[in-house]
Image (cartoon, rainbow, N blue to C red; front, top):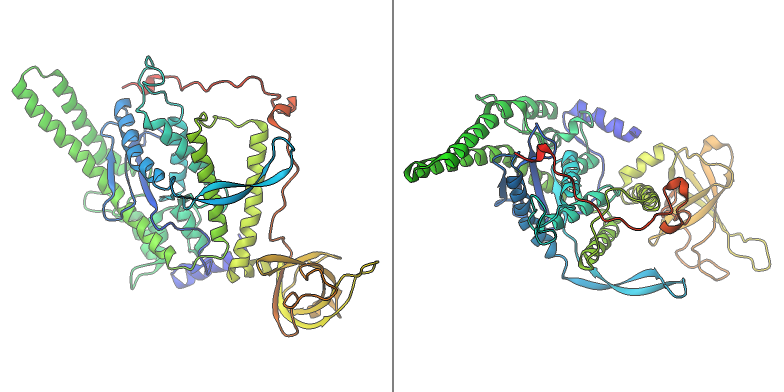
Length: 532
């Protein structure tokens, strides 16, 4: 945690209100996000109990599994979820624009530019908290290998046709959420805590109600008081007034309300199955319908407060202006969405359970590169973030006091002007260290030439190295002038690619290769826990 973040948390404690950790919004917010508020049972990992899902804050779609241990009901829930999510994804897949992409020519091996289709926009999914991200990945992993009756007529417990397709999309979104700066799948608590610092721990920030209480407390109440009330206050029946932000449920709800309701549902279903009299069966069907309705009301009572809290948090985020580099990162999300759409259209198999060594290394390197790029871009977009880098000695700001023209040595001397900067910051500069400043959307490189006077005086001499044109004299606007305020960073603004990895066929034996013939993925075996 940076010094700025620590100070912001201390100030939040002192003032009783969350303090801004950013002056701009560093994540993309879609005009029509798909909000997904899941609820799972406490006794079985990943067993869905219900969900609220949709794009209309006033009319969410309620999905319920009356008996979570019933495999057929769980598949029906997933199929109903697919009926909501897949049309939303498909609505973004048709509108495309022509874009250029650098690719490798298979004949010559050279890098060439080709024109391809790029989706104009991409669908965004928002879940309440980080636990929702884990559930999306778990659902994707459990669904994408399911066999349908069309694929294997003899398969036991066939899944509805749309379930494996939804699993592939959820897997893609879950993987994309691991890429720093991506906005395809957002956990609202992570986004809010990135933009506001509260007076509680980062673990407590995962409670959406408590987090919102710090950011926007009721009038006349401090954030700490409102957060404590959101976490602990219960009604006369002993139920939390602000339920957890899913997918976990409160034990008091499980024991006092949910378990008896499911037991009534099971008894009614068993009695209906054993009924032999038509009139008796009609009464039992009414009892079963009433029991199912009770469970639906219970699920809605736990998910609706979280649903409203998610939209309230989105409203708070929309009040912040969007950062300058957010659109660039969203374009990479659009490329990711378009590429996965093309893979599905081409009939490629689902994502494997485990990546091979080369793919895993590429993913890790890509995420490290995106993390460094995100940190650099957030600092360039946000003075508050840049202040943290300046305190850490990774950047400095000051005023230009002198510009002296100088040239490099050689047959064709190039301009290498010396710029003197007075700063109160204390950057960690070594001999001939490279520093960078933003110039017309690009990074201009300078070299630290030394101090003018004693180092504690804070007068630095920098040698500008590039972005001055091809002429003998620097182009107008390419150099700072005397009296200009400048900000230089010790970190690069764009990250370089790493060493090229071998093809999967050339993977050394120490990393599991070379791979043999591709093996088709085998569906998960049916266990005793899968059968009611």
